[in-house]
Amino acid sequence: MDVNKYILFVRAAETGNLSKAAAQLNYSQTAASHMISSMEEELGIKLLYRGRNGVSLTEEGERIYPAAKELTEKEELIRQMAGEDNIQHGKIRIGVITSVAVKWMPQIITAFKKKYPMVDLFMNDAINYEIMKDWFSKDVIDCAITAESSRKENETPLVKDPYYVILSPEHPLCACETITLTHLRGETFVIPSEGTSYSVGKMLRQAKGKLMEHSGFLSDQAVIAMVCGGCGISILPKLVLDSYGSGGYVRRALDPEVSRIIYFCVPSGKTLRPTVRVFSAFVRDWVKENAENVMGN
Image (cartoon, rainbow, N blue to C red; front, side, top):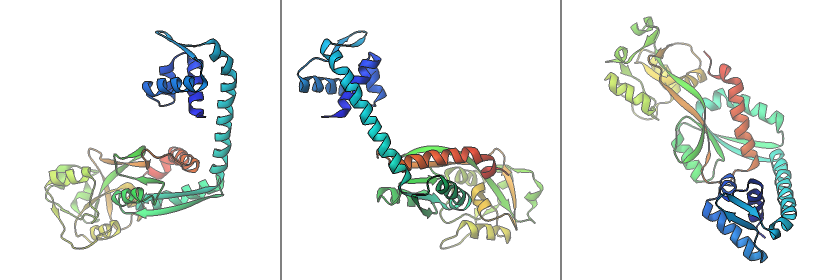
């Protein structure tokens, strides 16, 4: 017995429209029609009259409807009971970019564990989303909080993270309240080895600046140190800057503002465990409730 056919039959009877019932259950109209026909063939009776204005129960359909309705309600109860148990127990493997790991995750993990103490959280820290994409493909993580759009995962935007220009305290541009592309023309830029977002790269090209030469890996923290030492200027997101403190350099907002988006991502086309669904909702709510604190000046 395919319970999904009975769920569709009950929904069609309640709405009086097979197409509407199919849409509610994420079936195509063709698939829904085939499911009802298959159910009628299995039972050896006709269940629905189909007309221009929708569908209605046949006499046989009316006779089995109460039992079908009870079956679907019990099926839903079983799912809820299983979900409640899985929510209280299990594990979640999370991929996060470094700035989120530093600024958000200690608070998120502490608050989540208070509510769901039996759920184990495993965090993986990555410098960029290319690593996370590999983790998703190898089933290393169940979800991710990142700042880049993969276009292959289901993404929920959480918050904007504005970029700032950072300068040594002696730099002449410190006198400006905001920084424009014109201000950046001809400046030497210190860029992290993992690269910049498309928006930052576009700004640097438009400003016709010079890149500080270096070989090997250059972390965000090293970039900030280079700027503090007067080696050049840089453009970094607020979460990154907040992760390493504000000593030794001056930050200035861009005019016009440029931001990246922080996303919550889950694998596309994969059924999520109840714990992951709950964690996703928890993170979204946490960011909304704490947006002023986590992204405020």
